[in-house]
Length: 574
Ligand code: ADP
Image 1 (cartoon, helix red, strand yellow):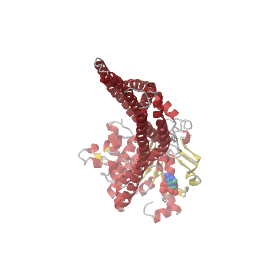
Image 2 (tube, helix red, strand yellow; image 1 turned 45 degrees about the horizontal axis):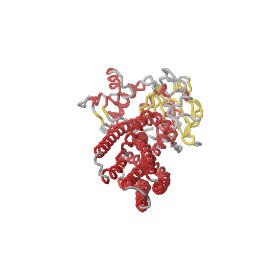
Image 3 (tube, helix red, strand yellow; image 1 turned 180 degrees about the vertical axis):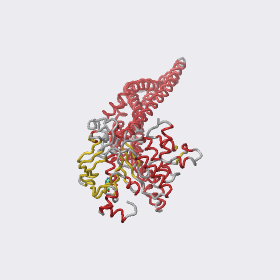
Image 4 (cartoon, protein in one colour; image 1 turned 120 degrees about the vertical axis):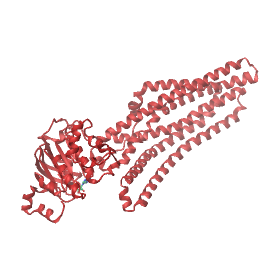
């Protein structure tokens, strides 16, 4: 993935401008709120000079009412502001999450080969969180802060231009420090997203592979890796905390310095006690938002860092390139032809070389060969998960690389080794490719795959909830659910990766029977391990080093006494 850097302009166009109405209301509210907030500091002068010094008590009720009204207005507007913008910010987060997830699902399977699923989870869930600060109160507070500061400066100048100069000098130094600090922090935040993703990713893997970890007594190793990860995260947070605390404390220090300066200078300027107090109050009102702005600044920086990473993901090209995949094919009969197909996962390292064969509609093609010979790759090409680097694959005579994936995949079914079952009931798992299938269709699939053979023994039958990754079911039972699912989907083209795991003879015969019903009448590519499947196949392709070494039917190949014969004789299972 290339490194992306999101610019303020892009964010403005794609996020902020779209919500201009809301942000405008937010701004009006913040103007009112901040304006009302300035009444109290302004009131200090009349209070001090007229009421305390001159004892002009008639003014007191009016002044108190004014301050009370101002405080109430401030409270109401702040409430509305937070409610309005925070809700919108959360809404934006959910919209963005969905957008990222949608894009993620459209990426090619190859993308996922190189990514940890947990890290991607973090991408979708955490990286977009930061935008909360862009649309939420962060941005509006920033503008409000600037506004308060500017108005306060106006008052300061009005009260005493010279004294204002002494205040502004340390504040400009602070401004420079803050800007510098942010340029340091952004990459730190960016790095944080990556570390979080790595740590989450590893943790997910650890939990998924808990049996292997326990089996190899590798817990200490995993604990160490995780500890190192969280330590790295801690160091990263520490780094950003140092920068932000430099900003905050230098802010406080400079405020103190300005106050001392003002006190020192007070004697030289001809100000009433009230005017002096008013000046000090406005000074605080000018400085406070500036210091606060530095916090908001770091939130915005975090938001940008998250968006950078989101953008990276969104820039990764999707598999269904509509400018190339222009042909929408209707119902296919499933004639698949490979013509001089070569494929490489890494440039220059072909794993398939000039593979050619025909898989007529409704036929079963068994792919056999040693591990790593290229069987899965051939099947992956038929599933359109991969694209040939040269040569063509056609379906019903149409070049598959030009066919829209939707239109092809809706006619495709896959049953993979150790097939994936979702958390939920057996019924939900079978219905998942066709949630709207009728009860009769469901029953037919359940029967054809011999799923009822074991669900009838369960109290809740098909409504039995299976554990995460189906751990409560035996391997054979999981396979049968996967087969029932594929039967229900009723695909024209079927990719089957037979489980290698040893099943007891009873399960084995159920699976054989259900596979028979599944393959019937569909163009099937099966990475075959069972002799029964191989014997039934219309053609067997013996794959070796990315080429088809032999082809034919079982008896023919046995009689030929070639590579297949060797495989068959020397290995109990192929
Ligand atoms: P089989 O299914 O016969 O065991 P595969 O088609 O999985 O073989 O693999 C063929 C070759 O391609 C092997 O050398 C394997 O290491 C390589 N290969 C498979 N998947 C990938 C991948 N995602 N990235 C790089 N190389 C791969």
